[in-house]
Amino acid sequence: MNRQEIAKTIVELIRANMPGFENMEVDEAARINTEQGFDSMTFVYIMCKIEAQFGISIPKRRWEKMVTLGDVVDAVEKELAKK
Image 1 (cartoon, rainbow, N blue to C red):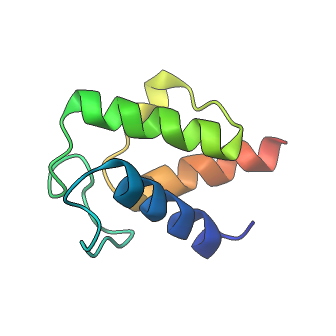
Image 2: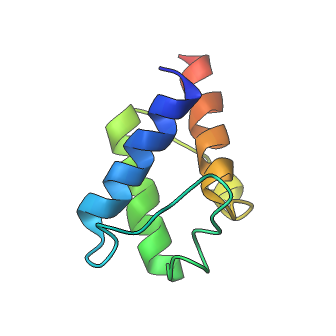
């Protein structure tokens, strides 16, 4: 799975699980935990959905450093490379 496919899948997960985000434009520079209105619980929920979708586990300490969608894509890419 390439980077664009990972990003697309993550954006689709966000849109499918977050009412009000269906039509929102989200690119890799988007600050998902602020601009997109994610509070900490929403972010955890989305991260759990992402981990389940990709069959990976991202260490919680890395979650704290994620700010943009690109950061999340990087983390998923890194974990997928380990498989």
